[in-house]
Length: 304
Image 1: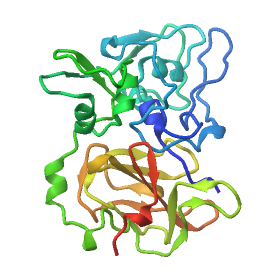
Image 2: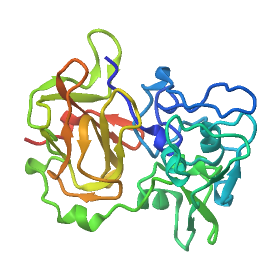
Image 3: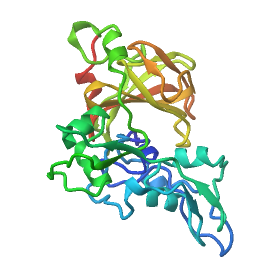
């Protein structure tokens, strides 16, 4: 079973593994006709982190000079535009009111979200800026076509990935801490039926699966900020992603409904979704945790 899924597409670049974005809006189209969006089933095992890029993802376009719009060229797809300007697919879709199959015709003017810029101040370092916005520093350097080892120059402009934002540390500190000194709490009361790591039938799981019942409440495993809640990956129900302190991101897959929206600040134990039944009728939550680009066994972080 392929349990490593989801969302690098939201930041237009993946971390870890060889897969690209789980949603690929590509494929050919007849000349003069819009190219439909298609799902690339070979790449759903890409990494989970929405903020880390693969080392080979160095971009031709300067992210600090993003234009306000883009005129679609002959044969160009939504994926092409997203990749060119390093804009999350979801942001492009929402900014332009696109609907499935997200086809775009040559000559159409697409609105581009305004680039998010951080101006370097005295004492700033790449590591410090990356930590402030919950981004892997190497990924931030590559995103800006910079040498990760080069010092920042005061007054320089640093582009931030669109999904990056400063975490609400005040809310995180005010939330009740998990018992026993653990970093996370169980997101669902149920039996663990899938473990992290290599699987007996081959392959590898970057998370755990927890059995429950259709409609059971799924809880935030730690305080943080919701960075995604939606159904962009067909076959996996509704997915919720939460960014936490110390560059952790947790994922909750196979829900039937999200109870939160992007940008919401949540406390540990807050209800964030309702568990859904899969195609085989069984209700199982897929729970993953990453720190930067590294998958972490949730069991090593969970309290009682």
